[in-house]
Image (cartoon, rainbow, N blue to C red):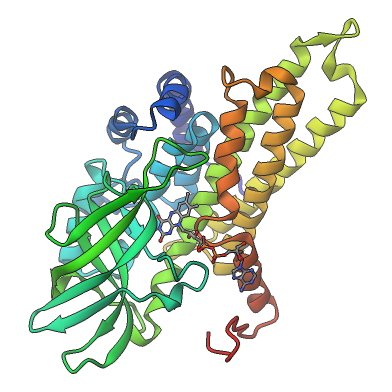
Length: 392
Ligand SMILES: Cc1cc2nc3c(=O)[nH]c(=O)nc-3n(C[C@H](O)[C@H](O)[C@H](O)COP(=O)(O)OP(=O)(O)OC[C@H]3O[C@@H](n4cnc5c(N)ncnc54)[C@H](O)[C@@H]3O)c2cc1C
């Protein structure tokens, strides 16, 4: 288990203060309005929480993934969407560019994120969800540029994020496929179209949209070269995604922790049969089981984030953390609502929002089924192709 340093406890305390005093009181209205919380983005940027993981020479704070998850948990305790914004302002697409990009690409990414932009990562397509390598978006080389065509969906921050990392099959001038690469595109560039917004169950103040590429022309310098080349490009680029998975697990943990704390307090105030309901053993055991899940999820998350060092979190550690935190969050938020009785079911209180928000994390960023396959292939030390012809 990781012992937090004095600096880390300070980061956590600062994040908690901002979350409790500024972010939390706005969460209910943002959920109702379903509008991106620009006010929270401004507060996060001022506090230095966007681009924490970006090295100092690029304008960030040069902090670690573990430092970042401390902030994510505090935000998510009161507002899951704001937790997600911190994740995507420090992990995922940004991790990829800051680790694999060239000098100019790093400068570009850092300038957007440190100014408050939550980068969008564009992988999923209608025909390629879990089977992401079956994506059909293509990038055709023409002289010193590429022309991108295709369509993504369920892109978090579609229409509000400026910086995009788009995964596409790369073809050379002779039409030969070279593998999968990541391209940087900026909102407003001709041919980058924001399509339909999904009417989501939870996490409602952040848009999930289609992102369509229609003859999007990008300079060859917008292609991120994966470390082992385009042939193994998808696996290479997805290594950076392990940080995003740890981040997503942390948002789930935060939502669950927030719901648990509310239930713990309520159970000591609410009286039935002439006694506080926490005096009933049935509820005590529920609260204990919730606390065990939270502690265990936090342990897995700290381990995955803390072991990353200067690289990315380990694929199996990140997957275990996300699976356990995501599944626990669904159970813990539901139990918290149960402890509130009918009032938990009312939209006046945040419990129902927390249940809706928590429901997402077993799906986005790799489903819990797919992540179990990821862990299985690590512990069995063998490839486990899911296609009928054995192609991974
Ligand atoms: C809120 C939200 C935000 C998202 N944000 C982004 C984003 O920013 N960028 C992005 O690119 N994508 C994003 N996604 C997409 C997400 O990554 C996909 O939804 C996910 O990968 C699953 O794909 P799918 O929905 O097409 O499900 P499918 O792949 O169709 O899966 C359907 C079901 O089958 C199961 N299944 C599929 N294959 C297997 C298998 N081999 N073994 C066992 N079970 C299997 C799945 O686990 C699932 O239960 C987001 C999704 C959500 C809900």
